[in-house]
Image (tube, rainbow, N blue to C red; front, side):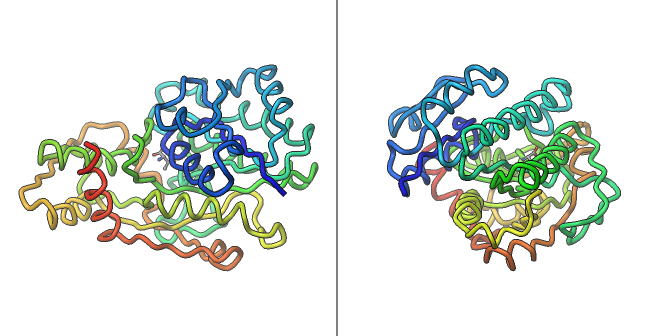
Length: 316
Ligand code: AKB
């Protein structure tokens, strides 16, 4: 069967890379990229694009009706740091956008829906190390509790209406093709740009703040393999933990120094993102993803750092 895939929020950090990967697999004409803003150069020049506002039900209904997608990836969201500045807007976009998509998936019998969750669903009382799939969850950011509520809606639509919705709790994502959009883990991308441009970086997270991260190559591969897995293998319909690689700003800086010996890192201790990072896990247990759909990480810290620097050098 030919898939017709709609990616909502295609201009973002994940969307930019996912659209290209999906177009490579399914053919450019079968992957409709969409975003509330005009498309980026790469997205516009590689296939179809639609302006979509997930909060505008009529607009979204029209797009579902026009393209009748077999798969929808809903990536439009406000991330943790921006969410704390615009809490109501973050709740509205992250929740209402999801409900609209789930409702249209029921109406148009969309075969599969992907929706990203995050390590932000965990909170200060969740176990900090090797955080399990199921545990106490008390997120204290709007982004975090919108993702936790969204997970519950995903499972609910699967149970009540049979929507084949699949989800991953992404760690911080690191890639060279697109910038992150207002999260707490963004330092781990900015540091590479500054290392190459100026040879130094002031981290907004403290030296020993460990967080789970993942290279974009792995994140895209995980997303597509979750979506390709037979439905019977998907035992979790809220969202799967993915561990990625856990490291601190100091450890990342040490790895960068192996390639750029003069690189220097410094730290600020006044950034509000520190409190968000402190409420999140330091490492994650993703044994359910490994068991259910065969997940396996490929990029460790040295491999990711080398690849990031090689690619960024070419494009900066
Ligand atoms: C953020 O920092 O808000 C995101 C996330 C971990 O979901 N990158």
